[in-house]
Amino acid sequence: MARPPTEDEVHAAFEVLERHFESLRAERTEPAFYTSHRLPPTCRTRDTFHEHVKRIPSARKDGRVWMVPVADYHAAMKHPAPTTAPAADDSPERLFARAGVRVGRG
Image (cartoon, rainbow, N blue to C red; front, side, top):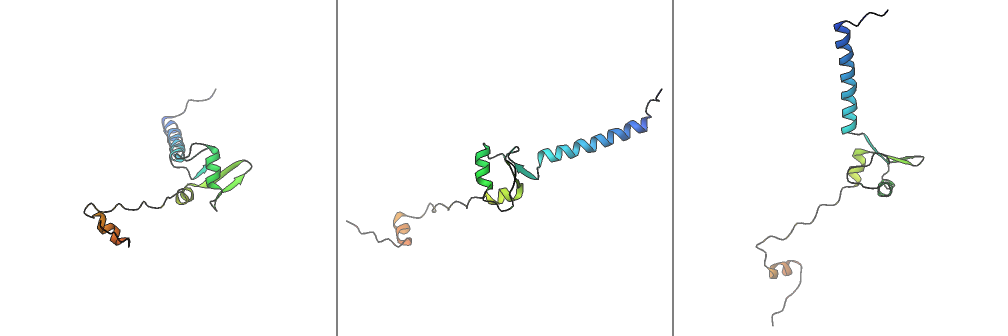
């Protein structure tokens, strides 16, 4: 008949399990790769994901599954910064003049 585990053995087993679950939690919240099965949060379909990652040099295809590093995906999906709106004190005449358009009056 097997002896019951000691208190130290139980604590050691819990520590091993805790480290294991912590690594799983970190893996689940911060993936290293996006795949066709684990899509980025901004991508709704596999087809859209496939179209995007085909243009990323570090993306790899294994069978029907695409894989791409998370950092490379986000770097490739960056959109150019939007142009700034004109200042509120710019009059239409000043904006036209800055653009090189001559405005004749009446």
